Amino acid sequence: MTTIQDEHPETSSVDPQASNETMPEMPVEETAEATEIVEEAPVEATVEEDPVAKEMALLKERHIRLMADFDNMRKRQARELEERTARANEQLLKALIPVFDHFEMAFLNAPEGAFTDGVKMIATEFKKVLEQSGAEVIDAAEGTAFDPMMHEAMTTVPHAEHPEGTVVNQFRKGWRLGGKIIRPAQVIVSSGAPQEA
Image (cartoon, rainbow, N blue to C red):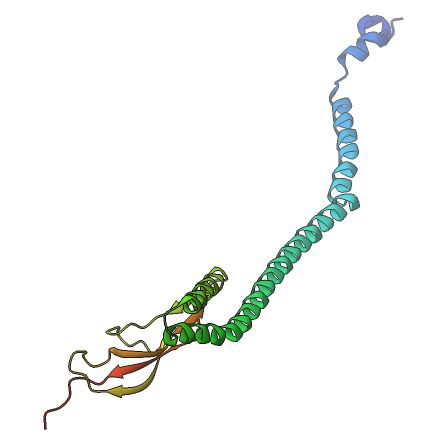
């Protein structure tokens, strides 16, 4: 009497090593990939939600704003200091200009002599000090075109030699400081040639 195992001897005895060699390795690779994905996912989440990185970015932004505010404040203070200095110089110049005018009138009307020469030297030095502080004289010579920004017309007179709108005579010199008119020059302006009777 024959059995099934006797008829098919190759199937009756199963070799454990042969069964391991014929088994596919696909599930092992899939599980390895799955573990890798599971391990990488929490790392990416921690990088995106890193509180230290957020705090550093916030501190950097605050630092940039603080430096910009400090730079603006420094520029504003320098501008205010320059304006205060200009106002102080302007007030001092307004107080000293009449003194200089008196010096000029003194040596222009005084007789020739040692005293007049001394006064002239003092007026020259005085003028140098004013010019070193940034002040400039506005000298409207005869024949200069009248400029209402720098000249103050005391009166107009007809003149045969000078056309209309030109300076005939200067009554008092003017001064400016840093481009700003402190005192305009007082002048007499020509109204043109006199009309014939």
